[in-house]
Image (tube, rainbow, N blue to C red; front, side, top):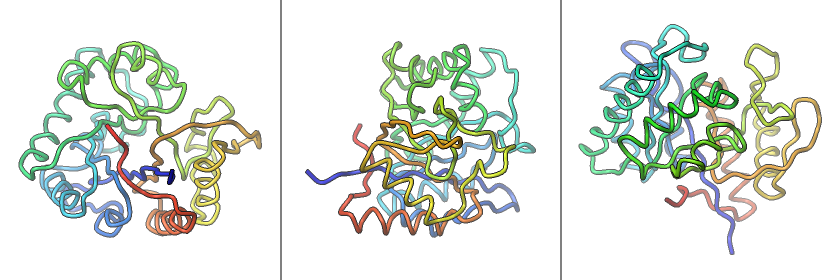
Length: 254
Protein backbone atom coordinates (compact mmCIF):
# COMPACT_ATOMS: atom_id res chain seq x y z
CA UNK A 1 0.00 0.00 0.00
CA UNK A 2 1.27 3.47 -0.90
CA UNK A 3 2.46 5.49 2.08
CA UNK A 4 0.52 8.67 2.87
CA UNK A 5 1.47 11.56 5.15
CA UNK A 6 -0.25 14.84 5.95
CA UNK A 7 1.89 17.97 5.61
CA UNK A 8 0.58 20.84 7.71
CA UNK A 9 1.60 24.46 8.16
CA UNK A 10 0.61 27.20 10.60
CA UNK A 11 -1.03 29.94 8.58
CA UNK A 12 -3.18 33.06 8.66
CA UNK A 13 -0.95 34.74 11.24
CA UNK A 14 -0.87 38.15 9.55
CA UNK A 15 -2.98 40.90 11.13
CA UNK A 16 -3.79 44.49 10.27
CA UNK A 17 -0.88 45.92 8.28
CA UNK A 18 1.54 43.22 9.46
CA UNK A 19 2.27 40.36 7.05
CA UNK A 20 3.73 37.09 8.29
CA UNK A 21 4.62 34.02 6.28
CA UNK A 22 4.17 33.05 2.64
CA UNK A 23 0.59 31.84 2.81
CA UNK A 24 -0.41 32.34 -0.84
CA UNK A 25 2.39 30.05 -2.05
CA UNK A 26 2.60 27.59 0.85
CA UNK A 27 -1.07 26.64 0.74
CA UNK A 28 -0.59 25.19 -2.75
CA UNK A 29 2.00 22.73 -1.41
CA UNK A 30 0.53 21.41 1.88
CA UNK A 31 -2.48 19.26 2.72
CA UNK A 32 -3.61 20.86 6.01
CA UNK A 33 -3.36 24.31 7.59
CA UNK A 34 -3.64 25.50 11.18
CA UNK A 35 -5.29 28.91 11.04
CA UNK A 36 -4.58 31.56 13.69
CA UNK A 37 -7.75 32.81 15.35
CA UNK A 38 -6.87 36.37 16.34
CA UNK A 39 -5.15 35.91 19.71
CA UNK A 40 -1.47 35.25 18.92
CA UNK A 41 -1.90 36.35 15.30
CA UNK A 42 -4.53 36.65 12.62
CA UNK A 43 -7.63 38.80 12.40
CA UNK A 44 -11.13 38.37 10.89
CA UNK A 45 -10.11 39.40 7.38
CA UNK A 46 -7.10 37.08 7.40
CA UNK A 47 -9.15 34.20 8.76
CA UNK A 48 -11.76 34.71 6.05
CA UNK A 49 -9.12 34.88 3.31
CA UNK A 50 -7.17 31.86 4.55
CA UNK A 51 -10.24 29.62 4.82
CA UNK A 52 -11.31 30.69 1.31
CA UNK A 53 -7.87 29.72 -0.01
CA UNK A 54 -8.01 26.38 1.77
CA UNK A 55 -11.37 25.64 0.17
CA UNK A 56 -10.01 26.62 -3.27
CA UNK A 57 -7.02 24.28 -3.03
CA UNK A 58 -8.74 21.40 -1.22
CA UNK A 59 -6.66 21.82 1.95
CA UNK A 60 -7.87 20.65 5.38
CA UNK A 61 -8.57 23.45 7.87
CA UNK A 62 -7.76 23.41 11.59
CA UNK A 63 -8.15 26.01 14.33
CA UNK A 64 -4.87 27.22 15.86
CA UNK A 65 -5.82 28.83 19.19
CA UNK A 66 -3.11 30.51 21.21
CA UNK A 67 -2.55 32.73 24.22
CA UNK A 68 -3.84 36.30 23.95
CA UNK A 69 -0.34 37.57 23.26
CA UNK A 70 0.15 39.42 19.98
CA UNK A 71 3.32 41.12 21.24
CA UNK A 72 4.95 37.79 22.05
CA UNK A 73 3.32 35.85 19.19
CA UNK A 74 1.96 33.40 21.76
CA UNK A 75 5.46 32.13 22.47
CA UNK A 76 5.65 33.15 26.11
CA UNK A 77 4.45 31.04 29.03
CA UNK A 78 1.33 32.55 30.58
CA UNK A 79 -0.47 31.84 33.83
CA UNK A 80 -4.12 31.68 32.79
CA UNK A 81 -7.00 30.48 34.94
CA UNK A 82 -8.89 27.36 33.87
CA UNK A 83 -12.04 29.33 33.08
CA UNK A 84 -10.19 31.98 31.07
CA UNK A 85 -8.17 29.42 29.11
CA UNK A 86 -11.12 27.18 28.29
CA UNK A 87 -13.32 30.06 27.18
CA UNK A 88 -10.53 31.64 25.12
CA UNK A 89 -10.03 28.36 23.25
CA UNK A 90 -13.78 27.94 22.70
CA UNK A 91 -13.97 31.52 21.43
CA UNK A 92 -11.17 30.94 18.92
CA UNK A 93 -12.52 27.62 17.67
CA UNK A 94 -15.96 29.16 17.24
CA UNK A 95 -14.61 32.14 15.32
CA UNK A 96 -12.80 29.96 12.79
CA UNK A 97 -15.64 27.45 12.54
CA UNK A 98 -18.08 30.14 11.42
CA UNK A 99 -15.71 31.17 8.61
CA UNK A 100 -15.50 27.50 7.60
CA UNK A 101 -19.30 27.41 7.49
CA UNK A 102 -19.32 30.58 5.37
CA UNK A 103 -17.05 28.95 2.79
CA UNK A 104 -18.62 25.51 2.94
CA UNK A 105 -15.57 23.64 4.17
CA UNK A 106 -15.39 21.58 7.40
CA UNK A 107 -13.29 22.44 10.41
CA UNK A 108 -11.21 19.25 10.64
CA UNK A 109 -8.96 19.65 13.68
CA UNK A 110 -7.57 21.90 16.39
CA UNK A 111 -3.91 22.50 17.22
CA UNK A 112 -2.83 24.63 20.19
CA UNK A 113 -0.26 27.24 19.24
CA UNK A 114 3.18 28.06 20.60
CA UNK A 115 3.71 27.96 24.32
CA UNK A 116 0.16 26.88 25.05
CA UNK A 117 1.08 23.70 23.19
CA UNK A 118 4.59 23.48 24.66
CA UNK A 119 3.34 23.92 28.23
CA UNK A 120 0.92 21.05 27.63
CA UNK A 121 3.86 18.74 26.94
CA UNK A 122 4.52 18.35 30.67
CA UNK A 123 1.80 20.36 32.47
CA UNK A 124 -1.15 18.01 32.95
CA UNK A 125 -3.42 20.82 34.16
CA UNK A 126 -2.77 22.83 30.99
CA UNK A 127 -3.33 19.72 28.86
CA UNK A 128 -6.57 18.93 30.71
CA UNK A 129 -7.92 22.45 30.22
CA UNK A 130 -7.18 22.35 26.48
CA UNK A 131 -8.81 18.96 26.04
CA UNK A 132 -11.84 19.94 28.14
CA UNK A 133 -12.29 23.08 26.03
CA UNK A 134 -12.50 21.08 22.83
CA UNK A 135 -14.68 18.36 24.37
CA UNK A 136 -17.15 20.95 25.62
CA UNK A 137 -17.99 22.20 22.12
CA UNK A 138 -16.70 19.72 19.52
CA UNK A 139 -16.04 16.28 21.06
CA UNK A 140 -15.62 14.89 17.53
CA UNK A 141 -12.85 17.37 16.59
CA UNK A 142 -9.39 15.75 16.55
CA UNK A 143 -6.55 17.54 18.32
CA UNK A 144 -2.97 17.49 17.03
CA UNK A 145 -0.62 16.27 19.76
CA UNK A 146 3.07 15.53 20.22
CA UNK A 147 3.60 11.80 20.86
CA UNK A 148 3.78 10.93 24.59
CA UNK A 149 3.09 14.51 25.70
CA UNK A 150 0.60 15.19 28.48
CA UNK A 151 -1.72 16.57 25.81
CA UNK A 152 -1.54 13.23 24.02
CA UNK A 153 -2.08 11.23 27.21
CA UNK A 154 -4.98 13.36 28.46
CA UNK A 155 -6.73 13.34 25.07
CA UNK A 156 -6.42 9.55 24.99
CA UNK A 157 -7.68 9.24 28.58
CA UNK A 158 -10.69 11.50 28.01
CA UNK A 159 -11.65 10.08 24.62
CA UNK A 160 -10.89 13.12 22.46
CA UNK A 161 -9.75 12.02 18.99
CA UNK A 162 -6.10 12.89 18.37
CA UNK A 163 -3.58 13.00 15.54
CA UNK A 164 0.10 12.42 16.28
CA UNK A 165 2.17 15.34 14.98
CA UNK A 166 5.87 15.51 14.13
CA UNK A 167 7.88 18.68 13.45
CA UNK A 168 10.08 19.00 10.40
CA UNK A 169 11.87 22.24 11.23
CA UNK A 170 12.39 21.91 14.98
CA UNK A 171 15.04 20.05 16.97
CA UNK A 172 13.90 17.50 19.55
CA UNK A 173 15.18 16.79 23.04
CA UNK A 174 15.74 13.16 24.02
CA UNK A 175 12.34 13.09 25.78
CA UNK A 176 10.76 14.19 22.49
CA UNK A 177 9.92 17.70 23.66
CA UNK A 178 10.99 20.52 21.36
CA UNK A 179 14.28 22.30 22.01
CA UNK A 180 13.59 25.84 23.23
CA UNK A 181 13.78 28.52 20.56
CA UNK A 182 16.18 30.32 22.93
CA UNK A 183 18.91 27.86 21.85
CA UNK A 184 20.80 28.42 18.63
CA UNK A 185 19.91 25.75 16.10
CA UNK A 186 16.55 24.90 17.68
CA UNK A 187 14.86 25.96 14.43
CA UNK A 188 16.22 24.13 11.38
CA UNK A 189 16.28 26.28 8.25
CA UNK A 190 18.31 24.13 5.82
CA UNK A 191 15.83 22.59 3.32
CA UNK A 192 17.97 19.53 2.59
CA UNK A 193 18.50 18.74 6.27
CA UNK A 194 14.80 19.14 6.98
CA UNK A 195 13.83 16.93 4.03
CA UNK A 196 16.21 14.20 5.20
CA UNK A 197 14.66 14.32 8.68
CA UNK A 198 11.16 14.02 7.23
CA UNK A 199 12.09 11.06 5.03
CA UNK A 200 13.66 9.32 8.03
CA UNK A 201 10.57 9.98 10.14
CA UNK A 202 8.18 8.68 7.49
CA UNK A 203 10.18 5.74 6.14
CA UNK A 204 12.08 4.57 9.24
CA UNK A 205 10.01 5.96 12.11
CA UNK A 206 13.11 7.57 13.63
CA UNK A 207 14.56 11.02 14.31
CA UNK A 208 17.94 12.19 15.56
CA UNK A 209 17.65 14.46 18.61
CA UNK A 210 19.55 17.67 19.34
CA UNK A 211 22.02 15.63 21.41
CA UNK A 212 22.60 13.08 18.66
CA UNK A 213 20.48 10.25 20.02
CA UNK A 214 18.26 8.35 17.61
CA UNK A 215 14.72 7.87 18.91
CA UNK A 216 11.69 6.12 17.48
CA UNK A 217 8.76 8.29 16.39
CA UNK A 218 5.24 7.82 15.09
CA UNK A 219 3.20 10.46 13.35
CA UNK A 220 0.30 11.03 10.98
CA UNK A 221 1.07 14.65 10.18
CA UNK A 222 4.25 16.69 9.82
CA UNK A 223 4.41 20.42 10.56
CA UNK A 224 6.52 23.17 9.06
CA UNK A 225 6.14 26.50 10.85
CA UNK A 226 4.87 29.24 8.57
CA UNK A 227 7.10 31.89 10.12
CA UNK A 228 10.35 29.94 9.68
CA UNK A 229 12.38 32.24 7.38
CA UNK A 230 12.92 29.50 4.78
CA UNK A 231 9.47 27.92 5.16
CA UNK A 232 8.56 28.08 1.48
CA UNK A 233 11.83 26.45 0.41
CA UNK A 234 11.52 23.84 3.17
CA UNK A 235 8.06 22.81 2.07
CA UNK A 236 8.98 22.73 -1.62
CA UNK A 237 11.94 20.42 -0.99
CA UNK A 238 10.00 18.21 1.45
CA UNK A 239 7.18 17.82 -1.09
CA UNK A 240 9.62 17.00 -3.90
CA UNK A 241 11.47 14.41 -1.81
CA UNK A 242 8.31 12.73 -0.57
CA UNK A 243 6.76 12.54 -4.02
CA UNK A 244 10.02 11.23 -5.50
CA UNK A 245 9.69 8.28 -3.11
CA UNK A 246 6.04 7.73 -4.09
CA UNK A 247 4.77 9.01 -0.73
CA UNK A 248 1.41 10.71 -1.12
CA UNK A 249 0.76 14.05 0.63
CA UNK A 250 -2.88 14.12 1.69
CA UNK A 251 -5.02 15.24 4.66
CA UNK A 252 -5.09 12.76 7.53
CA UNK A 253 -8.18 10.60 7.92
CA UNK A 254 -10.75 11.59 10.54
